[in-house]
Image (cartoon, rainbow, N blue to C red; front, top):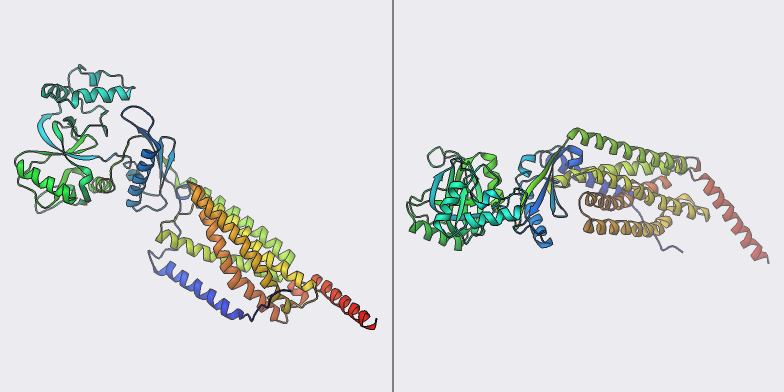
Length: 517
């Protein structure tokens, strides 16, 4: 026997659902930008995919720990760009960055090692064309990066001033620098500036970039100071003291800001700087200054990376993919609707209505999740919604088949609804719990676009329960109390009720025979 169902008030449940929908779409239209559009992933709206290949000073494969650390730092940099749906994934010794929509040029700068160090300038030379290769650094075959790094260190990081001068004279500022991200901070360094207009002989590092607490892009100052964009730095307490001591002892000298072995700027120290601040100036525009500030803010990478590929994904292809996904979802929904209408009639209409309402709730939640947590819908997510149509329809079918079982036992449509619901909801809750658990495990273990599939599947499963409990069950209860809608020819339960009538008559006849006996 089923447990007592209690008294249901369908109007109350439907009113609660209506309030939820109104609150949901009030947030959609009256918060954020007010546009009811979900954020789309790179495969739907186009974007940029950048592949970074790691390289180490000794030429050996990078460790898993250093790759994971680099991925986390780049992921933080991507998040600092404020672009939702961006993704950083490991593929062997490569890092693959995907950025949907705009922001492709910023993504191409994310692999910068960003090891900022401060060195005193020992000597500055003009970047004239060097003579024919005579140093080991220039005579190395270009394909052997390990030998090139070691040869460059032997000359450009020597403790012998004569060797450093020879290396500076022979250095070609237009050639690729094998020391980028591989220099030794404890030794002097010969390097070029970013504009390739000067060469520098630099003393060992006196202040490391890890002492930077914050960095920010600063616009040009019309009242004096930097004529272009610059990057302001705030040091931690230890770094602030070191910076103050250095500038106090070296008034009139130059301090070089060296980023990944390249001199970004080398200003003269006009007075002691005691406030724990510094400013990097150079040929920056707003975008490059912002990029550098973000890179410095989120830390340096433990590895040096080369950009091996930068691919732009067309938005046209994304629109075609989205249309294909919507068509597939529409066909799936249509087939479910046709089946339900043919097999359940009135109950089929309630199924279709519940599916439409469920789709409306899902859409509103997608828009808000895109604003609040940066969730983006991709093709895998669309596939998750298509699968969820079947899961939602299964919940209705479990309820309706349990309702038919009650009617077959000889009960009326009205009396069968509460008894069928008590038994069906256990099965619905169990099935949805299993589906949600599977989606949650898949989300935790998966990478890339599979996470989008798992997220939308799990979210749709939760919203399925909301619709079944607050809409489908109350609507069936209301239909069972309406004289017209409860007619067998309208409800589609005529054949089942005839079986129920025969079973009820057979039980009565058996009871009468038993009494007479």
